[in-house]
Length: 393
Image (cartoon, rainbow, N blue to C red; front, top):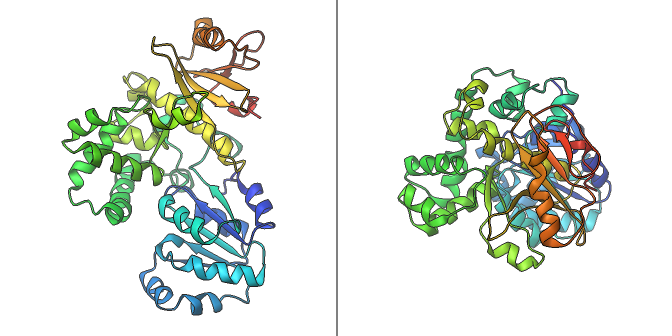
């Protein structure tokens, strides 16, 4: 099944302006499929092939020279041999062939570190997350109910292969992910504790992180908890969203909220095996909020932009689920409600935002689990599966 990715046009556009294109994202987000579709004449290699990896490590210059006369080269999991980047830098400076090197990687922390050292100014960076609701709609395979979509998740393989046993898929995904990525980076020996840690994270979706409490519940140190969270975020398992302050420095030092990049994975960790279970589950609202935050993130990533998403909370307890920073002077408040029924009091906190900040709001939204749109004065009510209609730009 072919599912068109909305990021495709941006990747093709920038491949005509930069010699190197790098695409990071979680495992199974569709990076390999996408680059093969967009660059069919490029030679494809993966550095997860241990024999090839050994050859490239022993002779990186020879490896690159052997592909220098073709249309281009796709290097999958490029972070496996980071010394390649220095050699690529020399080639692109000499050859000046736009779009020649296409790099992909599932470990954002390694790939970005090496790229910023060797390929600054020569590389177009993209983030490919799992499928968006809009992409599923265009392919005619989106769920009609929010609960069904949340529970199934967004990994392309579950749709392309029509996988019905989601529990087995996510169990295998977690096992493979832990063994390949986290153990390789942190040398974790106690896998049981780490899997417990992931489940505890899933139980805290939509909450501000209390590192001491999280560490205590998992019987690890706060330092270890922070290190594990950092790797989970860098590997696109979780997403941390920081509070909105006009003073930008304050945003970075205050505790963030925790979300999961894929709600299907979160449901698996929480033991939710059907959309019927989810409908009555205490985490339904938090999982719905997580899905919407990630859908908003995908809108920006698919435009090759960083998502300017925050949350807002006062010491008195007033809160807005999402603040979209459209520009330095313009912020868009967004409330996220898992109710299918539209209620005007859902926008109450947005009115408080206007009073406390002293700024009138041109556009504000309440995203809810229904399927109708309501505009007019005040907040616009918008369906969970129609976020592309929001005026964010």
